[in-house]
Length: 146
Image 1 (tube, one colour):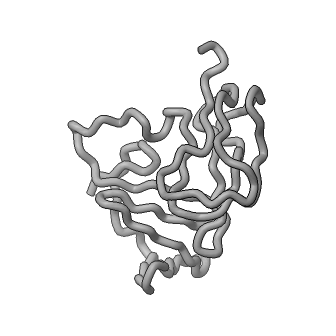
Image 2 (cartoon, helix red, strand yellow):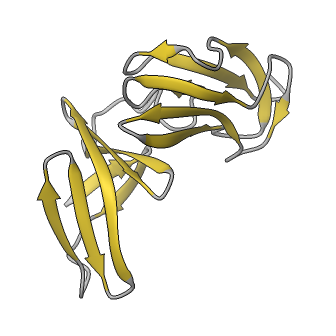
């Protein structure tokens, strides 16, 4: 099955030796290397999976889907409702792709919001301690040459 994971096309299969068991909003993923727990939140056709401090946005693949505003848009959005626990950037800061800009705590797990690309923070909409809603734009980054 084809899906989009953070805006990137991927083919999902059944890897050998991996089992996944659903337990409410959590998944227990057993691999030959051990057992991991993931938090899962579904919003329409999009599923957010949080595991090992990273959040993955998984969507059903559609050739006609407009991908603007997903990965690479420069908008750091809240993947789920929660509280901002750290703001690691300010307006005008130069950031690099993958750099953590904001840390959101949701469902007792910390969710990093990272830069999609190298650029400059053009907008910062939250402070530590703020409560945020699902999909809220927390930070915007523009490419340095823009």
